[in-house]
Image 1 (tube, helix red, strand yellow):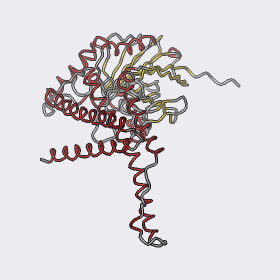
Image 2: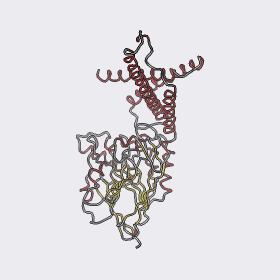
Image 3: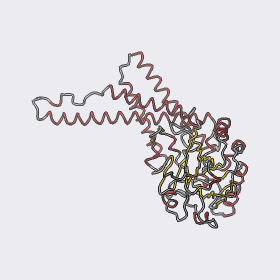
Image 4: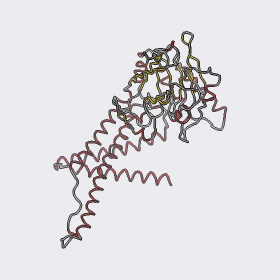
Length: 426
């Protein structure tokens, strides 16, 4: 009863929003014929969107699919884009109407102290300003088109971010070492094998020495990766491929009261990564040697600051038995781990690779400026951060989750070029 009431209230609010948006746009100076065309289109699209939403919810609840199709992703994305665009228009118009009502109240009160003999007969609330209505409509329309691009093109618009880092204590044999990071594959959201393969080709074109994957292989179930194991197995790296787990990798179906069932689940999960050519580092490390010199690749299970995220990462366990004073690269899915545990850890982690935020899959990336709603939730949400000669890099993610698209925050492949810092010349 409670859930039905909640859904009823939500549906009622959606309908009110649609009516409000309709009358907001109707305020333009339409001709009679144009107004009739607009009304028919608006009502038809609105009804179809509600029918499609009901059908989509029924499909998801009844069939519980773990694989997505292009059609389902497109429909989901269009409905979401339409809803968000209407929220923007509604917000713009509410601000305008709120201002109009406020001005009207002030005028009404002032009229009692003026010379009007009949203040109640006056019109106190000013009309809507055409400029604000036009601006709100333009902004919401632009947002819809941007999200439409993100749904159809942006989610597979793989981009390479190149990061050059210099270290005083990098072993000479690793000067010029190329490390590629990918994160947040979320295989259950993919809908096109060939387009994913384009991203893999871009990785291989970089000719990496090492490839690291920093968690969230799937959305929920480990079987989501099965159709894409072959394509990810094509990733090539001279010195190996390593992976760690993200928070979504713990959400699969197994009896959480049965340790044996849990072990079987994650053994199979690890086996799938092995078929992709990745070695899973669960609170452990590996020594990587080149020409008699070495660095350590350390991997921890997920550790997130928020209480609802797993805190299975154990740095002490991961570094146990390691040599002292070595160069260390840490794979840790959630960037909050860096602030809470890593940057002050007694053993120096020269470079920590994280993901998790997706850059919110929406934002702006310019050469000297970036913005995303992610920054209102995460202090460190995308790109490189440095404190006390320790670096954190937050990858924006290879896949997508929830909204089946990306706007501005394109799927990322990060290439790190590690260099030995040259001594200063006096």
